[in-house]
Length: 380
Image (tube, rainbow, N blue to C red; front, side):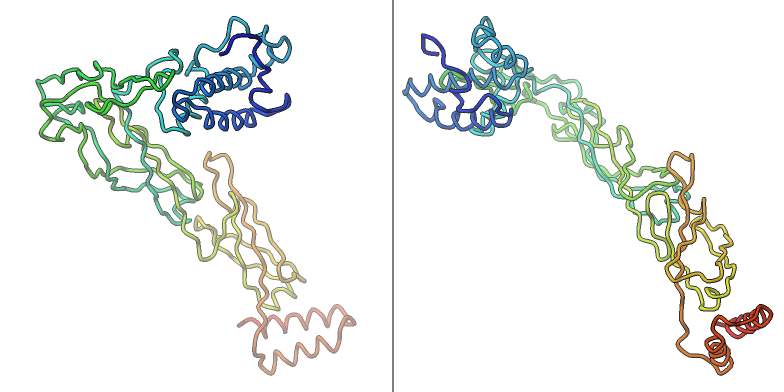
C-alpha cells in the first residue's frame, strides 16, 4: 500500500455502505481484472491499486472485520492490516483469482498453507438406477444388480507399486506434490509436473494395475428395497463405490429407485388414486363393489344411491405403506359413470318410465321400479 492515510474501503471498491457481500465480490472481481500485476507488468500504480482493492475486500467481505470497520474506521482493523489471506478462513479470494486467471493458489501474498495432494484418497461415489414396479415398491423387494466400477488392486493393496518396492520422493517437488513460483507479489502453487501431484515417483509399477492402484471390475450386489419406497428415493450402500487410490477408502454407491407407472393406480405420497367404472344403475340406485388394493387385498366399496360422476370414495388404509412402517396411506376411488351406448327394449322402456314419472313416484312403486332397473342393467 502507498504511504499516508488509507482511502475508505467502500470508496476503493466503489460500493456503498449497504452493499451486500455479493456486490462487494463483484466489485473486487472487476478491479482485480483491471489492475492485476500480470496484466500490468511493470506498472507500480496498478500493483498498488490491486493491493489496495485486495485489502478492502479482505475487510468488507468478512462480517466481523466489516462491523469493526463500520464502527471505528481503519482503527478498528489496525493490527490486522492486509499481509495475506488465510485460505482456511477466506477461501473466496483464491476462488476469485482462480476463476479469473486459472491459478491454483495455496499461498497468497506469502501467507497461507499448503494442501497436500498426494495422500490416500477416497474413491468416487457411484450412482445406479434401479427400476421396480409399484407392487414391488408397496411390498419391498430384494434385487441383484451388476455394477461396473474401479476396485482397489489386490496385489499392491491400491498403492500402485510392485509389492516389495517403495516409490521414491519426487525430486522436483520434494514430495509435496506441488511446486511454488511467484507471479508478481503472489506465491502461486501448481501441481508438480514430474509426479502429477503424487509426491512420489513409482519406478516399479504393479503389473496387475499398471501402477494405477485400481482395476476395472463388474460386481454383483444385493439391494434390499424397503416397502413404501417412492420414486427418486436413494439407497446408500456404504463402501460400494469406486475404490480409493493409494490405499484410500472406497466411495459409496447410491441406488436411485425409479418406480414405473401403474396401469390402474396413481401415487400421491402414500395415497393411491384409481378410477372405478360404474354403471348408470349403480350410480343411481347404489351398490357395493369389490376392488383390489396394490397389495392384493379385497376391499368392499359402497356406492351410495345418487353418486355423481367424479365423486371420490376414500378407503382408509388402502394405499401405500410408509417407508418408516408407522402408517399406511389411503385409497381414493374416483367414480367414473359409464353410460351404455345401446339399450335393449326393456332398459329403454324402464328409463322412459322413470323419466315420465319424474319425482312423483310413490315409495312402493319406486322400489319396484328400482328392482326392475337393477335386473335390466345387471349385465352392463
